[in-house]
Length: 247
Image (cartoon, rainbow, N blue to C red; front, side, top):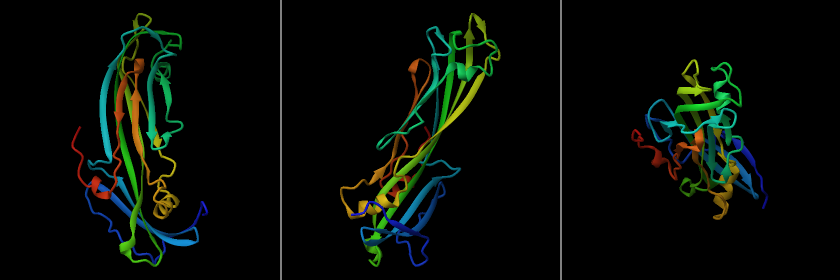
């Protein structure tokens, strides 16, 4: 059986079987396409859920303060590190540490990588958004009742902010004593929104059916955990209709 297929998008003869949901706190998009695979033609409907300005299970946020207890050098202590985990492993490039020196050098004159830090307290904050792709498949020419939800995948974006309320080095108070910054990571698993994977899952019960962003871990000074984010990993569209309770 071939490992690739040909896709024909936005065919006007394709009528989606699954109705696009209507909800005030989630934006829903629907599209259909034809896909040729293994000598057969399939109709694939993609239902996409995106966060909007309102609270939903597709949006997460929080904050935490961490304090240091030891003396250490600005060039060796991590200020922030993130690891995004997906169904098949970690996201390349997301696992990157930012050291204290890099976060402070624009604010503090005279600091170097070997400067000894005697005290630092950092407030971490984060916001995370998830986009979900649901794919429904049937053989071309079959009735709509044969359409099946075969493949679900997610991708996420995480914005992380940090702020030093206090920052001391070499026995002197750093000026200014408010240092702040941010970074953003994007986590998109291999196979996100894959029509090929959806068709394979329809044809083979043992094929991969999910590609999720499972977690995003944020660590701060002294490798302390600032937050571990667990994005929604829905099996069905109805699981993200309900509004997420405030954290």
